[in-house]
Amino acid sequence: MSYLKLAASGVALSALMATTAAARDEIRIVGSSTVFPYTQAVAEQFANMTGAPSPIVESTGTGGGMKIFCGGIGEAHPDITGASRAMKASEYKLCQENGVTDVTEALIGFDGLSIAISRSNETDWDLSLGEIFLALAAQVPVDGEWADNPYKTWNEINADLPEVEILAYGPPPTSGTRDAFVELAMHEGCKELDFVKNGGFDKAWVAENCSRMRQDGPFVEAGENDNLIVQRLEADANSMGIFGYSFLYENLDKLKGVKIEGVEPTTDTIADKSYPVSRPLYFYVKNTHRGVIPNLEEFIAEYMSDDALAVDGYLAERGLVALSDDARTTLQDTVLNGKSMDALN
Image 1 (spheres, rainbow, N blue to C red):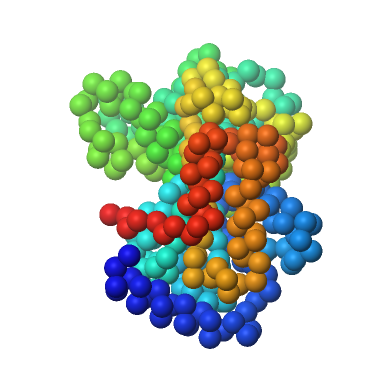
Image 2: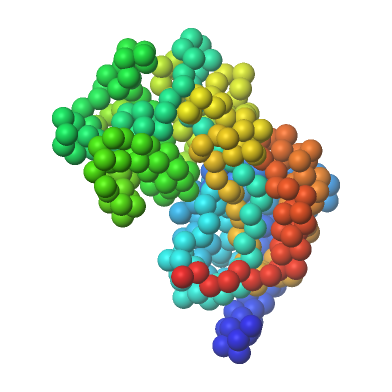
């Protein structure tokens, strides 16, 4: 660690310790709606085991959580943020600018980006990434031209699909789930189209032209509360929802997963990477708050325990796809010892 970083960390620690007498009793956590149920489960387990105040866990979305987390140090700022993607270089820069210079990154496991539909829908849905793109993208190929999306029903995209209106509820732009869905489903689906494959378009063209979700009705931004999407799917048997696998897993009595490229989202298909839309999940710890915010170290230890993270742990029971034993051991060493993440370029 450089002298400048040590000096900056010292100033930050002094500023935080000045508030110790009035430090809040509760750990404060923000971030991803996908990571939220896992962190909430650890918070409940921690409070039950220790009798300490239960950490306050807020579902703010990945982007919103990063902005709040990187806002500064001290009791007015959260200790941990969950993320359904890795921290961006711009977010790392914001942290550095606001004195949040010592952060540990924890990759806790994996998740599938599920498209789900009500169990009362009788269709055995199986969509290609290309069909998903054609249904939900703002612009698509139309008669050899790149144009506004004209498709209103699924059978207009593929005659073998039902003649029902396209309606999908999904996350807003501030969500890491949205970022991941655009990258893993929309971009890859765009690349499957003959118009793109035969046109010789490169990655930059795809990123510029295949990232926008349509805003004319078939795709609806449903906010950061995935439980609201579940309620809407129950109310309309033909509508679909886009969220992390944990929400599908917790609602399998009401919902079923839509197959993508012939593969159903399950813990096994996400773990073996046969399910094509999967991603890593993270949380980030503000190390300057360790030893100052009461119980933070103990809460982190519970989150890193084998009871929580192992393949038979209580987070796996809630849908988290666990790391390998070796990867989990490396993670535990990194997080429990507060190893600072490297600069992002």
